[in-house]
Structures are given as structure tokens and as C-alpha cells.
Image 1 (cartoon, one colour):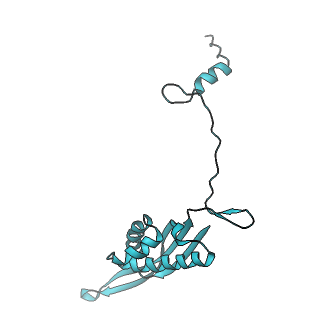
Image 2: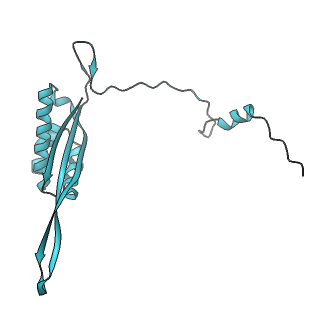
Image 3: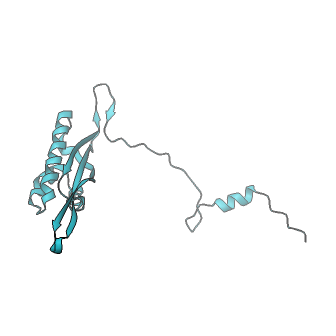
Amino acid sequence: MDIIATQKYVRVSPKKMRVVADATKILTPLEAVEKLPFLHKRGSEIIVKVVKSALANAKQKGVIDDSLIFKEIQIGEGPRLKRGMAASRGRWHPYKKRMSHIRVVLTSKLVKVDDRGKSEGNTKKVKEDKTDTKKEGGKLGIKSKLKKVLPKKAKRQE
């Protein structure tokens, strides 16, 4: 089960927000709420708010906080405010104030079982093991199989 929280139109550039987001991805959500306020970046306060919102959403859905991990943290570009600064000789130097859209997705690492016996959460499909014959070099013996199946080519007569 994925828990999603978003924050749009944040007046911090996406490039600066991605630095904080990359530092946050390696933590658990509870660690992020504790440690990010001590990171000296303006975007850290905003990401803490979004993570707290995601934790509140998880609590509302009945998911245990300790079992949550970050599935993804996306920092997208929002609209840009076009501004300018007066320069000498009556000129104008334009610049852009960039905005960010933040999307935090949490997922549970434990499998939750309903009353009806259905399982929710991360369930992995078990793949069947394929047994292939391998050569010493580690490659599959496909050429040798093809040689046995395909007939030899007839030589061209000149």
C-alpha cells in the first residue's frame, strides 16, 4: 500500500530541493523527521512538512509508522516567476524565480493481512527457476543447440 503526500508551488528551486531529497531517501521517514531540521538547507524544512503529512496519511490508513520506508521522493519543476533587475544605462537584466512540486511516496516493508485473508503491501512474485546448460565461459549453449537442430548449408557451386 502506497501512501502519497504532495506539496506544490514551493518557492525553492528544484535543483536545491533535490540535494535535500537525495539526502532524505537513504533515511526512514521517522529518522528524516528527526534529522532534517538540523540540515542547513531551506528545502529541508519543507520536506519535513511533506514527510509529516505522509506519516499522518499513513496513520489515517492504519499503517504502523515503524514499518514505513521511502518508495520515492520526486522533485518536479513548477512555474517560473519572471522578474528583472534594473541595470546601468537603462537596461534590464531578467531572471527567473523557480518553484518546485514535491511528491513523497511511502510504502510498508511489512505485509499486512486483512480479516478476509487477503494480503496487502509489498508482495513479490516468485519466479520459476529456469535450468539452462552453460558452457565454461558462462554463456548459454545456444549455438551448440542450433547446430544440432539446423541442417548444414549447402556449398555454392561456382
